[in-house]
Length: 155
Figure 1 (cartoon, rainbow, N blue to C red):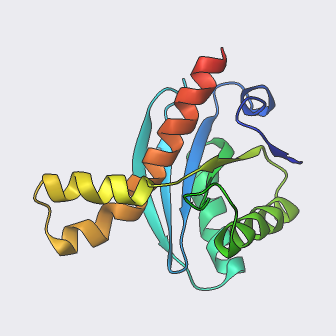
Figure 2: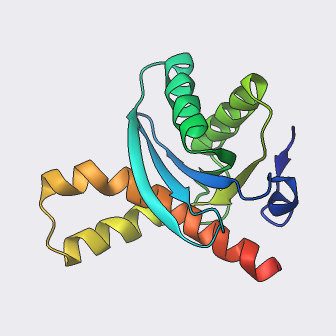
């Protein structure tokens, strides 16, 4: 299956299937889940990265358990709009993942997602340990919510 645009994603998704948001980092993958109506994103979990096969094995197990029908993967675009090496890594991850499982996947500009979440956690006076524990899954929820809102605006 190809990588879809956010506008194309809703028609590619199975009816009433959840969407999972991913914040892909070098050490972790933050996960968020939508509700079945695809209107609300909730922080879900964090996968500690080891190697690709183990990472996607854990990801697929969670997807199967929670009836996830598609993915929104955060794309770390530079502030000036260009795509650097982190974008290349993210696109490679997406291609490799789609090589193992045929499912709808869209990329979503994640600029400032981690910064916004970190700022929110600081304002909430979360400890450094607590911020480290939740920032990745909250960033995934921030990414997914942006994509869900964009899909809703499309109609």
